[in-house]
Image (tube, rainbow, N blue to C red):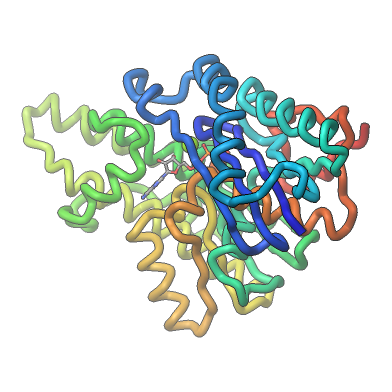
Length: 340
Ligand code: ATP
Ligand code: MG
Ligand code: FE
């Protein structure tokens, strides 16, 4: 079974071809980072226009690399939310056209479910049930994945997402966009205990997160140091901020695994590429005998292969979309694909 998948929810134009949902033949990612960098973040209107220019060439390049003909594709998966509406619409329109022309099923995929499913590509032996910690640019969520098509949200952030906090803190520190990888690198040379930044909701017995207070605390620290004319150790700030984020994530993720009664924790989303987070979770899971999985760095960022994997499991339930499929910018994790 050959899946063609398309992902255009933010600033990556990506297409992938998969065999039986878990084997990647090609996964082409065309990043717009250099285009948006001079603005310090993604400019939605520019992202849409770049997707329009890129989507067909990226699909072509992907089929070529996979050595697959368009006529051999069995179904088409596409991200229809959450994301930037104009960006999503480009992928959805392209996928609909291809599905119509080729007369093959169209499958609308939730981007966050895709992030979780990246783990099935990185770990052939991985099976539900497990708890997923989704940490990305727009989301911070704990999800109980009961089966391939059965998810329950355990908790999420009340305000900023973890990735958003990394990007905003990096920005006030004068680091280029996207800030996550920059802070990750800088933190390696810093002392994580240097500054005691707040760890919100840490002790409460709930599974919610909050990162906006931490972001303000870093901002206040930097401003007051500047006013006093004190020298700022960028590496210490990065390491201490990163530690505050990680401690809460690790604490709540392990609590969720215990509370749900599973034995596997899966990390997903762009922030899953963070080296200190991976290391901390790896150590904690080893101590407590929990299986721990995370995707390769390429599969952590936005890519179409993870969308194709999710689409394949939807196809097994004939969870198809029709040509009325629309972009849903604020799609929730457990929302079902809309009917036509
Ligand atoms: P969402 O998936 O919630 O819709 P998105 O698709 O924009 O949002 P992703 O592409 O999944 O987000 O992740 C991008 C985020 O990951 C950015 O905030 C980026 O800074 C962060 N990120 C990437 N690498 C790292 C890293 N090594 N450490 C910390 N954060 C990182
Ligand atoms: Mg991106
Ligand atoms: Fe994403």
